[in-house]
Length: 410
Image 1 (spheres, rainbow, N blue to C red):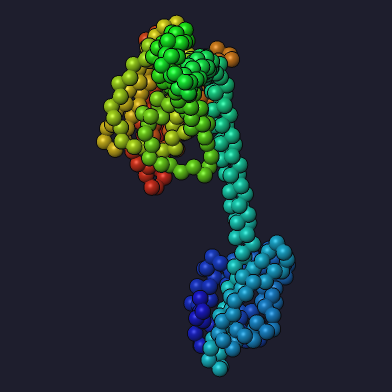
Image 2: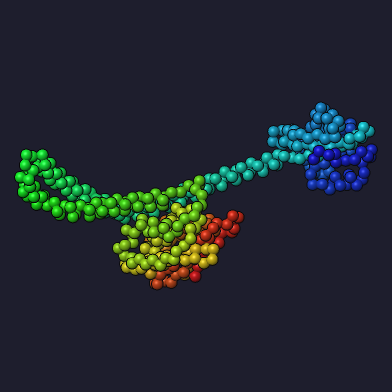
């Protein structure tokens, strides 16, 4: 605002004074001698705040002589003064620009309030940052708790292929010794004076070392060993993908069915002894999401489904697409959820499991993850018949934040 707010009239108009009184911010009407002609209520209140009992003339005294002179030479001056460190004030002096004009308007802004708002905003930002860190730590802890719960099964899934790979390597070592022995016989015969004379000895060694069986078994051992190593590599990669979490991650297109199968690979040892698994997959497009967090949801739902089945039962995994949304469902034939528990299903620390079998955070964290992805979790259940948890996600994330949808329960 570089233009003067008053005209070069030699007198203050009553309308101008009335308008100044009606303004919500502090305004003072002065002349060239710095005499105060009028101060509105906001100016009086601010003067009392800055220097109790001194009156609004105290605000005028905050302007230095050089700044006052500059205002009357140019028609405008703006600056920040600090009557005390806690109350910085921004002053704007607007003066008439004709030679005979001696009137001006002083506008005062209490920027200490801005500073307080800035401090409150910064404190709020720090609080949000701490909450984000806490949420990240909670999610990581729940992930590690899930891995801890599955540790024995995961160890078994790794030890089993490692076991037969080790056994195959011992057998391969014996086979290699036999083959090298036969190779030495061939070498000795080849460089002898009569190579054909050693033919019967070589054939006898071949029978004794059972070379024909070795040659038939060797490809199978190599194939089994390679499959075992690939199995271990897949489990380790699944664990790595599952445990990854960080604020620097960005949502990217991901194959949800691949993530579901990857998670199933981790949890399978906990399921295979009592669950018959059915897959009814419909191909899905790539979905924009944080894949590791969605896999955490899948793990929670699979574990819950397994724990709901006491002895033997079935888990059905299905998928589909409806418009610009996709869904994946986990259905079990377990004990079901009591109607009185349904309203509290996603409450933190609420659980229907016996003590020691659950933290009560799995579904709460799953809900927050799906809500962050602008999706929803739909739940249907009948006591004694089983439950279905249906995760619905948009294929593409909206570019503007929408209200987080509530889970549908029935």
